[in-house]
Image (tube, rainbow, N blue to C red; front, side):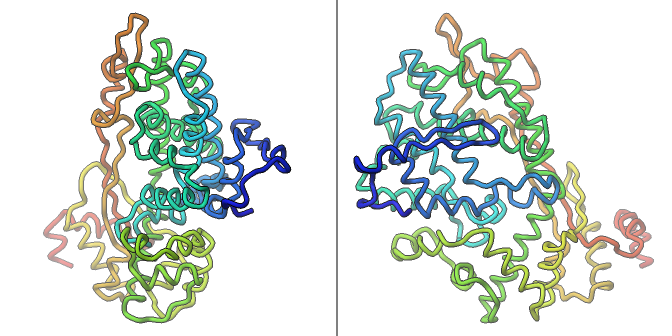
Length: 440
């Protein structure tokens, strides 16, 4: 059902909108109000069924095939619990504010690109998913006669009660509590299990900011440690990293060919974003562009990859075949940047073995870096509220020294190249030995 001004609930269909959803992670999720039902039924939200929550993580953890649709529902469920807890502690939250914060968390990821973060900037020109989510929410607000106005204010942190925004987006929000628990469940990585129920029960508000009561400090510590572990074991797993980097390279090559006028197969939804480079301003001047983006999902990418395996361009064909068939590039991770000598030695071997042009080599041999910080000292802090009314940042309140260390970003450098290069050990040894390099 498409939500519109005319499809909003009336007396005749009010009861059938109070649905109960059986979620494998949280159990029964109730639809708290009628507008939530209508938003869930809207095509903009239904699209999230076809956006993988974890990109290509299923290449490592086969169970990780859950969608953004699941996650947003779970985050809304936790938000209901949080509002109930805060109200029980005399925090004033009106019914209108509660409905607005439910809408804000439900739609917080509605603008994700196919494969979620993997293709964040591959199809649009420097436009992130938060910006697209805001565009979707603005359009929905028009369709629903302004009923999302407060939700948008909360989402953009313009509403006068700051803690409502922090429940949606902060270092301890309902988004993170759901995705850590959910991603842990579907990957089977137990390190990601967090005590979300206890953390929510310990929530309070002090000076208009979200805080965790003193007795919840150990749950916060576990939450931060779990987040760090999930990043390195799941989100930034080396195989996930190389698979998604290859996907980015594929889209980069496809757009390169499209810019040169090559007629590539693509679904109609994908073709528009391959052959034109759109930025945020384009969405404001081209009203139909948002609908076009709303029709774009993981299926468009998969269908195109299957056809690109057979295309005339050898680079696009080979990369597409490798991702489809899970014949991924080799990846190395280390703490320091890879030496230019090592990278050049591998490129030279690829030149000799794969008959690639200089331009083509960059699609098969490439390096970069990734980083993770479980806790930021710059963003909104996680406040610990003591019985005497004192508030401390978790980094200073915790008696665990590793909490402070978690605020320091860990940077990993990666190098990707084809597997089975001839005598790769000697090549890499030679890269650090000028004599060996000279002899080659």
